[in-house]
Image (cartoon, rainbow, N blue to C red; front, top):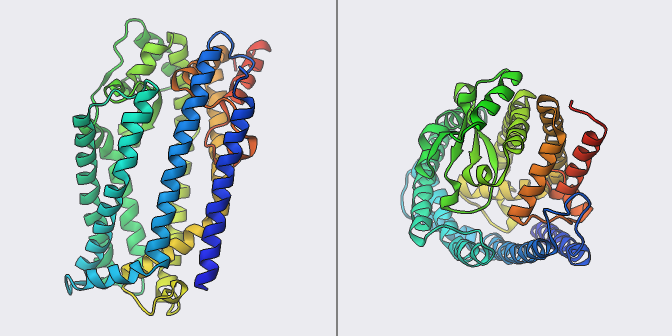
Length: 417
C-alpha cells in the first residue's frame, strides 16, 4: 500500500507540474498579443513585463513546489516521521503536550525552510519588477509577528483538541469540530480590530468626493459607508487590490491605498460594488457553511481513520502516536481530495461572475468595472493569456480577459443592470 500511495503522490505532483508547463507554454505562444479591449492601457512594453513577471514567479513557484514535494517524500516515505514521532515522545509523557510539541515544532521547521523562498520572492522577484516596497526590517517584523500569532493559536487549538480527545475518546471528533468552528468564528470577529492592525494601518476613505459617491452607491445596496476603509498596503508592495473581512457587525471592505491612487472614482466604486456583491448575495455565508460541513466530515473521517490499526502501515510504520496517525490520515485525505480542486475553483468563479453582475446592477456602469479590471491587470502585471485548462482547474476568478469581454458586451448593449 505504501508503494501505491507513493505512486499516487508522484502522479499528482507530475500532473500539477504538467499543468504549470502547459500554462507557461501557452503564455510564451500568445504572450505578445494585446487582448481585445486592453489596447491603450496595456502596451506591448507592459505586456512584455507581464510575461516576464509571470514566467519568473512561476519558475519560483515551481522550485518551491518541488522542494515541498521532496520534503514530503523524505518525511513520509523515507522514515523521518517515525523518528520524529519517537523524538517527541522522548520529550514528555504528557499526551496533550506531546500533541502540541509535535505540530508546533513541525510548523516552526516548515517556516524556517520556507524563508529563502520568501526572501527571494520579496527582494529579488518582486523588487526586480517594481513591486516590493518592504524593508528587510519590516519583512522580519512581519515574519516574527505572524509566527508568534500562529504559534499561540496552534498551541491553543491543538492543546484543547488533544484534551477533548483524552476527555471523550469516542466522540472527540464532534467536540473538536465544534471547538474549531467557534474559534474560527471568534477570529473572524476579532481579526479586523485586533490581528490585522498589527500589520497595517486602517482608516476611513478620505479622498475628496469619493466618500459621497461610495455613500450613494452603498445606500442603493442598503449598507452604511462606515464599513469601507483604506489600508496602507503601499508600505509593503505596489500591488493593488480590495478584500472583504470580518463577519456580522464587524464586517468591512478594505481598499488598498495603491488601488485608490491608480483608479478613477467610478472605477473604485465599481470595484467596491463587486465586493459588496459577495456580501449581499450570501457568498461569504455559503462558503463558511460549506467549509464547516467539510470540516465536520473531515473530523469524523479522521476519527474513523486513526482507530484503524492498519493506518500507520500505509506508510510502512509499525505504530505511531495519535499525532503521527493524524498526519498519515491528513496526507491520504489530501490525495483523495485533489480531484475536487476544479470543483472548488468553479464554484468560486461562479460567485465572481455573480458579483460582477451585482456591481453592474447597483452602479449601472459595466464599463467602469471593465476599465478597473484592465487597470488592475496592467498595474499587477497579471497573466492575460492563461491556458483554458489551467484556468478551469485552478483559477478562483474567471480569466480577466473573459470578464472584461462580458462586461463590455453588457455596456455595448446598454445594460446598466
